[in-house]
Structure formats: C-alpha cells, structure tokens
Figure: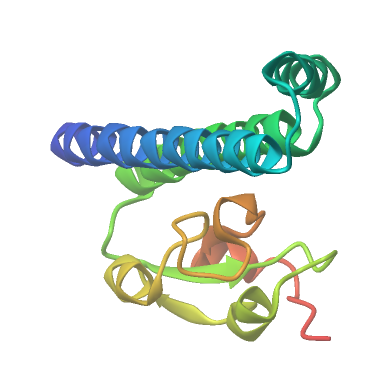
Amino acid sequence: MPDRKLLETSSDREIETLNIGLTAKVSRTAITIEEYINTRLTQGVAIEVIKDDLFKDLAEGGRIFGEFRNSIKATYAGSVSRFRDTAQLAETGMDIKYRWVAVLINTCPDCLKRHGNIATWDQWESQGLPRTGSTVCKEHCKCVLIPEAATKLAPIYRG
C-alpha cells in the first residue's frame, strides 16, 4: 500500500519546486529579451527591426526563445520524473537501500561517480537525488534510483 502522506508531502514540494523553476526560466528569458532590445537600440537599430527579429526568433525557436522552450521542456521532464520517483518511493518505502543507476550515455561526471553506489533514500536525498539540480546535468538527468534487491538480478556496469 503506497504511503499516502509521503505522496502528498512530496507532491506539494514538487509543485513548489516546479513553480520556482518555471518562474526562474521566465525571469531569465525576460532579462535576455531586455538585454537584447537595449543592446540593439544602443547600436542604433530601429525598434521595428528589433521587433521583427524577436518575432522571427520566436517563430523559428532561435537563440532566445529556443533556449526558453528547451529549458521549459527540461524542467517539465525533470518534474514528471521526480513525481515518478516519489511514487516509487511511496510504493517501496524509505526503509530499504537504493542503487544509483546511470544510463552511461552522455553521463555527467557527478552521475558517473554515483553510478552503482548504494544508500538509503534519506542518504541519497542529502547528497542530491536525480533531476534535483544537485548534479551537473540538473533536470536533464536520466539516472534512476532502483531498490537494491532489484539490482541484484543483473550486474551493474562500472566502466
């Protein structure tokens, strides 16, 4: 039976984390747009040209809006994965140990160091869970924490 209280607490925390992340992404994009406009105005470019450039960037997913879209996608994907992690935790419990498993394709150095290591959920939480911003790859992380008992069925590649 899933731990309902854990699900509720973790869900509330994840919603707040998602809100913070999305607000930060929007703020960074607004600053980038403001910087672009001010720089172009200082260079003597007409406001109509700047407006056309920004609309083109928006339509084509250029430097400014492409980066914004990608950051929103990564934030969303990370959040969905963290919800999945919470559901697993609520199902399996915090009393067992978990093994960090990396995909080993374009894996960041932080995740490579953690790959195959075993710890309790609380210990992993203090070190930083996948997709929580504690690793170089941040919300792009593809790593998972798997109950240790499940990983005994297959060896973990250690590179």
